[in-house]
Image (cartoon, rainbow, N blue to C red):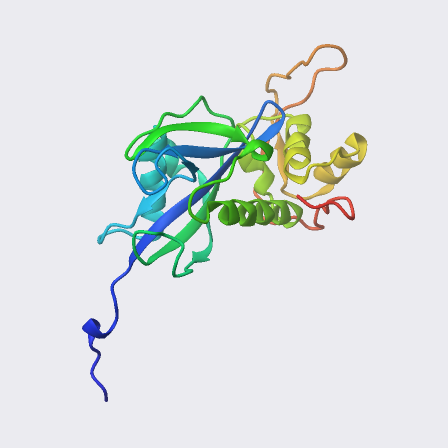
Length: 239
């Protein structure tokens, strides 16, 4: 058997990058950081950083999310975080060969973040206003947006954008902002309430009022993780 020679392969680094989404003021926002160091100093990018020798990619992703945005480690640990894909083009980073494991994270609306680590500052940016990003982060962001748009059809992922108690109107707004389409309110309500385990009514809880009309009932995320049947986006519409 031929012996493995580590010196026969050039070294390369592994990073994590995060596409973090939330719904604010009726629009889908993404978390961006302004780079404080070269390369691309002063440019906006997705939060992320290098993988340390003693940590997994997911551990690094949650650490970087806390360090570079000012979110607490406890908040970062409670986010919905899932691996998106690996980006390994040889020239994606001008410093050296860098392979990135990208993640997407979803969270309810939070206050403005603050930059930390090598980020000069951080901000929530409406998805449609995101300027050209450093490295290949435009591609990562587009892939992440496609992923969550598709997963909203077959999973209960939309509740990750909502606070612990939410109205069906707030849940519908998640679908509308991610898919970029207005949904029929009665039809949406019927489908959500007919899907086993999607949401649960908050018994005896306070009912939110939004001005005129009947107060809105409050719900929380149910026990299901998949939607049966799926909640399909209107035909011909893409996120």
